[in-house]
Length: 583
Image: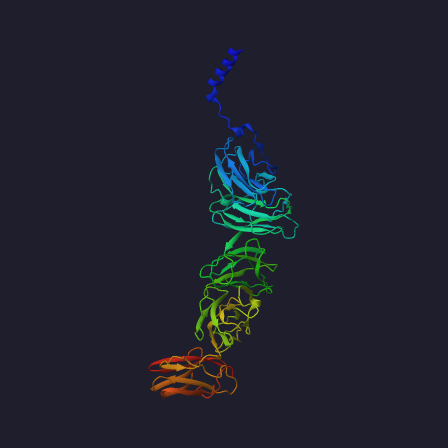
């Protein structure tokens, strides 16, 4: 018997090089994971093996049933658990769902091995494999799967096109789930044997609570199939959910674009530094009946946090004003919807509008580049009355409207608003069929702000003829400020009073010269720069002199209502002031 044992031992030694060395973990059979089936255990370490399908994404996720439990899951290429491919461990004490993904579109679907470890807490840790049995068609109707309590993770295949940007959204609107969903997108970039943990997602959203949704934007760098992972953070969560992937367009600032009629289209904006005022505007195209298109602005692509909603009647310009100097969002999720009639529309995002100084003349041309509107940043002082005025150029037909936006007593920090939230504005005239004559079609309004600060003046064209003209604003009075600069200057002209002037009022013009001038001129000009009345043409003494204008032109006729300018010119310099003449 002894010689038989020795013979058997020798035989085994002679063939030992033909068999792999068995590790301790191999002696314990790994649990086989089947697609869409979870396995739960209380052990500190649980080992699994699984065979994924070909040409599909797969995901293995782990979640502790205790809210304080923290698990980690790692993926291995060998049964000895020595060749680690990827691990998921978001952070110490994370407590959420951990998962690893694999892309078998570019590699063979060989057997893989996973190990789940408990890092903290107690109780069960559940592990689940999902084999990506569903492919989501971009821009198709949402799919509406159900979620069973206790499920951990799922993955979907999403075919994409190179260079296109997409929005993925999971929604529970209208449903009755208790699940706390998360959403992530993975891109293998065509790499063979690709495996990655949760933190390698190219886009991930896990910010909302139970019974809500999540959304992400992502861009495809190549034509391929990406993996879309859905998970639930709470073990007891269940219910149905809507899942869709749509193409989305990034709106480039100050570049108006025309889009064809559709019931829904997805856009997004990214405010750039320096953060400040912007306007998202939409003008429906022509048609009978007039098309209708409305705007929605959200704080993220899940379309849950509504920031602004502009829903005017059909055929009317819609816009949403934002001041990103005060708003925290880094991305604006934009949804265009139309309940009909469908039609084309012009969309524009105006960013970084220039500053318009009081009394300065700003020549506007909205028709050349097809703008929906333009914005101007103005600084206004509390308690001071201002007049804003747009005078269309002679012969043009455009139909312009004005709106002023900014802080008010009820909302001292302006963040978002729609056209209905304007502090003041003007929309008195329609399009001129034959073209505007001089002084006609002037849009003007007066406002006395309650707060000192930065405001946005938005001028938009309601039709497509192209608005061309001159824009200006000025204080009609200067309450609490001196009538001329406190530091002495060679030539000074105080704010005319009264202004605005009504009826037969005489307008007083206070001049201040450091030295006497043998030849000085004080001339009243209209918006075109044409001389209306010469008030002074001769010597002017040093110091203060008060001159007057009775509102008449050189021929003795009452000047038409509008905005005028008094200009004092001397050999040492000049000064000018606006006059609001209302007649």
